[in-house]
Amino acid sequence: MNFSPDQIEQLVLAAQNASEAIMNVYNTSFDVEVKQDESPLTLADLHSNEIIVRSLHKLFPEIPIISEEQKNTPYTIRKHYTEFWLVDPLDGTKEFVKRNGEFTINIALVKHGTPVYGLIAQPATGILWHNFNGSLIKLNAGSEELIPLSVADSSVDQINVVASRSHMNEETTNMIEQLKALNYSVNIVNAGSALKFCLICENKAHIYPRIAPTMEWDTAAGEALIHNFGGSVIDFKTKQTMVYNKESLVNNPFLVLHPSLKHIAEKLM
Image (tube, rainbow, N blue to C red; front, side):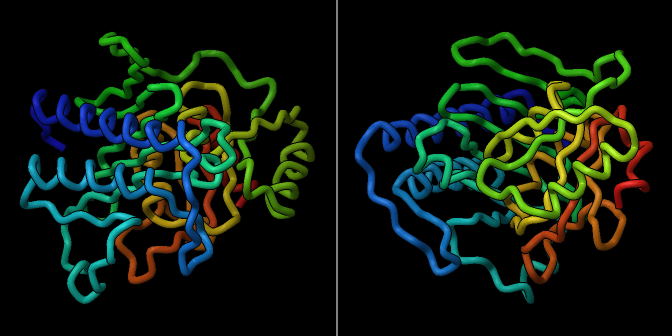
């Protein structure tokens, strides 16, 4: 990933502009449609998508884009992509509809099947996380101060397991019991959307098991951040790192681990 400082600045600005558009809808009595896959859709999704896609086309006209809110390019074409943008203009629309603030914008650059750049913005707080020049950065609302994120030096006495507010299930509960059987003290931390990845990158959570279905645009940006942080994202079926731009854009179940707990991966897979 070789972005110029101006390109990074414009990427952040695009996410901030999309965040503003999302919040303009959030603060109204918006309508909710239901898509064919039974997921919700609002004007916020569409407005955010328009801003981000337009900005990416302008900044990187040669790099194709795959977005949740656009008609997907056939696999016969996209299987030849060596790099592409993967965008979820509003991750956590269910949380948006519930008005709990736990929704995000996810933008990732994928090269040869691996996310190399990730940007996650939380419109409700104005906080943004992304990686560039080998660093993982947090940017707070209304501030130009870049806060570098690094692994905490303390040993883990209590494992914080981050779980979805909308997709908690029996398999996730079983993994929590596995951790207890390994003599770990376990605390549950709930969060919506891609914020679960961000909690790990801020040392506020240690494990994120995801058994319920997700799409590639839900996870690519978060995975880029986790890799930059030194953590792991492991496919439960292949026991390897996740692969992107598959024929089906549906992810297998996966496990995200904080760097301090990578050694217990085999015991949980």
